[in-house]
Length: 234
Ligand code: UDP
Image 1 (cartoon, rainbow, N blue to C red):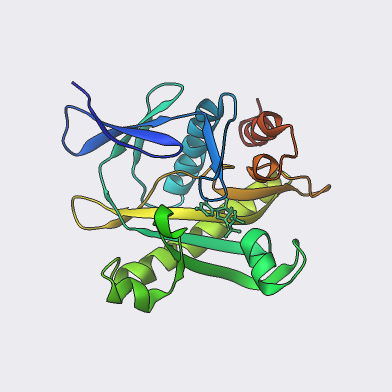
Image 2 (cartoon, rainbow, N blue to C red):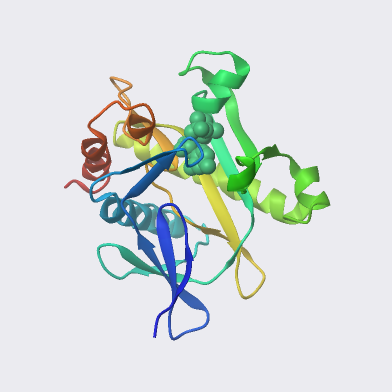
């Protein structure tokens, strides 16, 4: 019998008969402002399962190890069980959101080179920004794991940026989470969706991501659907 291991803001995790595998269930719940703003994006769970599956397949084909085994249903994916490293890895090509605010620049400023940042995954603290020394000192991740995550993040950025550009989407920034698998290897986990990335239309700069929800811009569902249409053509 499957039991729920964990319920997060956007997903639930269930056990399976195999101790090394879990089921990820994607919910429609949407949160922003560190959980202060709550709402629902209709069928987000279905759309995000489709989008994550698409991106993980693409990355897997390009040599990035990840946790997903296969999509099981509209909202469920079978994944390898990993121990999540409590460090969120954000990669940015263009200044937006918290970076634009912090540095006092316009959203849309193109960075001279991709910027990789680390945040301690802790809702109560509002995910504070950390560096490799913090990760090592507090025991969140080793220097080698931090280096590995940064290397993967930059490679993933190259792959996704080029792919999305062909679909007339600019990859502004995105957040990744990694886990350690049963062999001790660092692999990509969690999700890659419009919840965890900023995607702008190449021609109009129209936002096709969760900023539409965060900033009450409307047409949130339509934006996620448009991403799917451009990725998969439906
Ligand atoms: N992000 C995320 N989870 C978080 C914080 C950020 O998925 O807890 C994503 C966010 O969607 C964006 C990128 O990471 O694509 C950078 O977010 P930023 O630091 O600008 O924070 P925000 O302005 O979204 O609060």
